[in-house]
Image (tube, rainbow, N blue to C red):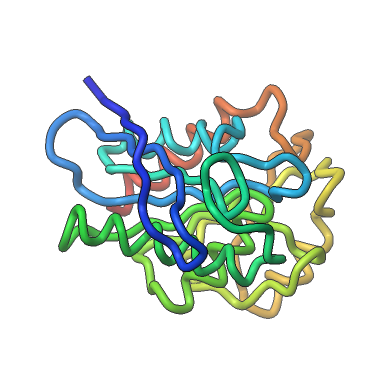
Length: 203
């Protein structure tokens, strides 16, 4: 049976709180999932985050979700993305130490997508997964060509046209869920299936 346990690891601002989820058998990859904007109530318990975690565990990945600095039991305070990027890098490095030589997947939802896009420039993950990334609200960097990017056309927080404008010069594919809002109400099962199918082909 898959298992989970609470962990504390060290970031630049002090301790960071996380939940480590393990699949059945030996993991075939590691994944780190980042949550939405802390100052708008985002935590590692967000339902898009936990949906991604279940998806990755089902795919056979050892998966870490964690609270950014200033959230839950994580030390520090909100840092507009810069400190949170260091938190994401610390989380990935923790997983790399715990599970050496496994491919890394970095995933994030909304603000967490922005953070993971920034972290990916240093971490060089095998795969980057961005769910409704906060394009237009933060200065998104370019991302790898194989990035899995999913967005709803009725997103009321991050407009689809902003995402397409950002993706276009990168020739970046965007999977658009017709009728889906920012938090994917009623569409989480479909979101899970898209991600599952993606990794069935790749890892």
